[in-house]
Image (tube, rainbow, N blue to C red):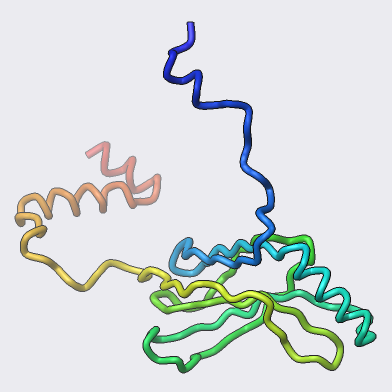
Length: 170
């Protein structure tokens, strides 16, 4: 018999695939990767397609422009790069070279003879550090005997297989 509380969890309804909004969101995945997802509303797509026909552009290329900042307060962009994405795409994993930096992304388009034109702008995110923190808080520091025990355990299990078995036999 089913639990009476779980009967109401699935009512047969599912989340919509699209919401009809223009939106671009980025999330840091790890120190060297950002995940971006977006939705371009049908109205925005239709307006862009109409403009392409009016201007006589044979092909529009969608792309993500990734901006890197050292600090969010400074509006000086350290660098940027473009990634071509297909028109049907709605998410992308973006590899970034530097950890511990601020990034934002723009989804836009290019046409022959037309520079990058943005459609959507994302939020600003910071990728995490690529290592342990240099700060050691005395309130959370392990006593020496516990730290030695922990480091011994860490070093034991980061050995090659042959070295691990050799030490076990001793």
